[in-house]
Length: 384
Image (cartoon, rainbow, N blue to C red; front, side, top):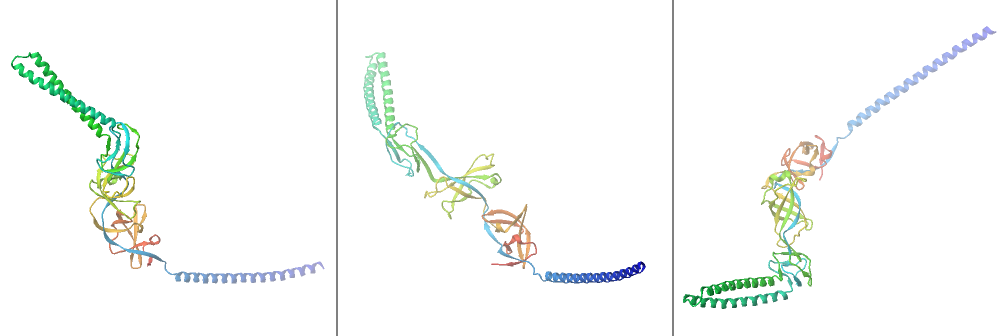
C-alpha cells in the first residue's frame, strides 16, 4: 500500500511540473509580446516626435528699425549749474541819523544814483549853516589882515614901520589864510554830510532785501538795504577734469531751467577759475547771460551745454538701440530678413543720440526695438 502511494505522488508531481512549465512559457511569451508592443509604440512615438520637430516653424522676432543717416551735430560738454547775480551791494548810510523815509521795497527796480532812503537832515543843515558863517568870518578876517599887510609893506619901504611890525602882520596874514582854508574845508565837509543824508543806489539792479524802515535810527556802515544786479547774470557750474582741455573763455553756452520748460537761454563762457576742487576733481567756471527782460532769477537751477567746437556731420543713432556688454558695444542691422550683429565704437552724446565712429554707416536699417532678443542670423519681421 505504501509503495503504490509513492508511485501515485510521483506521477502527480510530474503532471504539476508540466503544467507549471506550460504556464511559464505562456507568461514568457506574453512578456515578449508586451515588450514588442512597447518597443513599437516607442518607435512610433519617436517617429511622431521627429516629425513634429521637423514640422515646428522657424523662430521669427518682431522688431522695429530706424534708417541710419548722417546729421549735423555740434560737440558739447554737459553740466549743471546755478544762476547768480552779476553784482551785489549792501547799502549802508554814510552818516548817522533817523530814517525819515525809505523809498523802495523788496523787488523794486532801481537805477544808479537813484534815491533809496532819506535821513532826517536837521542837524546837518545847521552844521552847514555854521560852516558857512565860519567861512564868512574867515574871509572877512583875511581881508582885514591882507589890507593891513599891504599898508605896512608900503610903510616898510619908507622905513616908517619896523621890520618886526611887518613880520607880525605877515604872520597874521598867513594864519588868516590858513583859517580860511580850514573854514572852506569844513564847509565842504558839512555840505557833503548833508548830501549823504540821501542814500543813493551805486548800481542798476533790484532790491533784494529791505532791512530798516522809516523812524529807525541808523548808523554809518550798517546795512539798511541789499541790491543785486540781474542784467547780466552769472551762470556758475563745474566742469569735469577730463573735459578741461576742450573748454575756453568765449565759448557758447546754452542752458534750460525748470521754471520755463521748452525755453532755451544762451550765454558766453567768461571765467575759468584758477584751480580745481581737490575732492570733486572739477573746475568752477562762469558764463555771462544777458537778462534785459529780467525773466531769469538768481538761484535758478540750470542744465548746461558748453559747445566746444564747430558743427560737424556724422552718423548718430539712438542710445537705446545699443547693447552694452562690459567694454563691448553691440548693435543689430538688417541684412534681408536676417539680423546682423555689429560691434560699434561711439563718440560724443547729443541728448538721446550718440555719435558712431565705427561699425555702422548711413543707409543701413538699425534695429531700435527688439534687439535684446536677437542673435546674429536670427530671422526678423519688421513691424510698424
